[in-house]
Image (cartoon, rainbow, N blue to C red):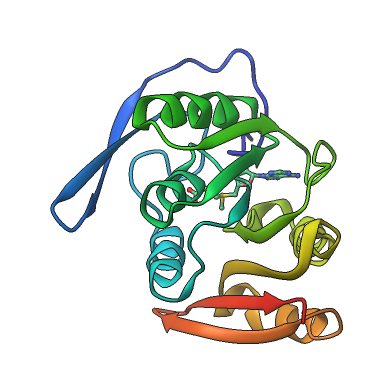
Length: 196
Ligand SMILES: C[S@@+](CC[C@H](N)C(=O)[O-])C[C@H]1O[C@@H](n2cnc3c(N)ncnc32)[C@H](O)[C@@H]1O
């Protein structure tokens, strides 16, 4: 079975447009077969973005882990003036993210990385809607290893569903970070994990 995080060079392409509305403004994203939530903005990602608009820091350096077609990192660059770096293990996702960065015209870049293997910089904010379907090990690796790529006052932002083990993941992360739940909606938790 194909997963949205599998690289498949034979997968056909059917571009589609995802419309994102913020106030009166519209941003159009190009999406395609073979990427996560290819036809609409995912509910969890949208909640994470909205929560960041409310409580997140502007003008900072952000790393979007598992970027898909680029929605999170690009919107933070557009509306929070962040300098965003977008990474994904899925080549098609990275390609779409790069296309969207160019089309939308934001201060961001995208490259391929299996978790953090191609990342060498440090960031003020690491943000992710983690790939739950890859299994808990990958999700925990993304969340716990983020610490190595965060600046001293850095923050890790993520969304996770209650029934996908939000509570147990928070328990584990308490050993590494100060955890705060910023938002809860329809079983989705928006969590910020701080370094200090
Ligand atoms: C839940 S999706 C979120 C996609 C996008 N950020 C959004 O909000 O629509 C998780 C993403 O993680 C990516 N992913 C899976 N395994 C990964 C890994 N080992 N390293 C980096 N990204 C990975 C998937 O390809 C997918 O794009």
